[in-house]
Length: 325
Image (cartoon, rainbow, N blue to C red):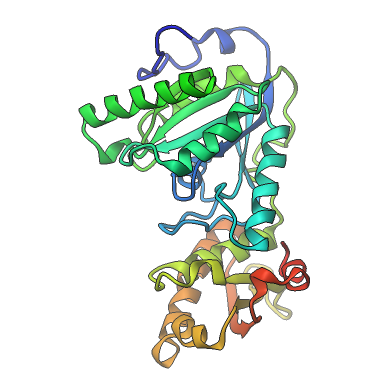
């Protein structure tokens, strides 16, 4: 690639060559980047509904959550992977395997780099891995552009262009976006779609994700539990939804869904942190997650949460299996 091509203006809707032809495209894209690079927030902004867990703590996405962007001319299926990082535990190694498997199966990879942080060792680690994947087109996405001024953004765009040249990665596009400020999010979809193979829609209209509802509910509870918790906890929380059952004896126009879920932590000393003084924190977790769960499922919910200790679950293969990893 000779000159750097950075996209900053939105094409006219429905007038792009892709949409004026009758070719329908459908395929998978995944966003990669070090933990906390804005991947999940971007997925949510593109899909227009909360489907991937977002948190201001690294390492919060555990499950591959697919968001589906429906367009008249295309269907873009977003696969949200855990952040790739140098693993310290067995769980970390498994998460990295999930990432590489995903990369090998998608049609386009979006590499997310935050505008407000210089390219660091974590980004290089991922870029080197990406350089080894030859056939899949790669789009560099500069996230969180609302946090920097134009000069800092320009410097980051140049640095990303250089990184590609240095490692032999040819970026199909370099796109600055702000998912929070909703800047250029639609443009990003417009640029990803032509990189998908031609084909019919893979999911019914109206589907936003194919993740089982129980897994999504567990993710929403886990996200609420992570809010405002001290730094040692993010890796140590797993949530398992034991059952989701419609309450019996309810009139048809007033349904209620009973959800029983367990929050697992690694040590009993962490129990107090999650539960909080007089159970206040756990109650807040319930109130916060219930609101999102009701929005997701479209029905009133009764949420029953319990905190349990699963000693050192991240290092124990049996427990990892039991908790769904």
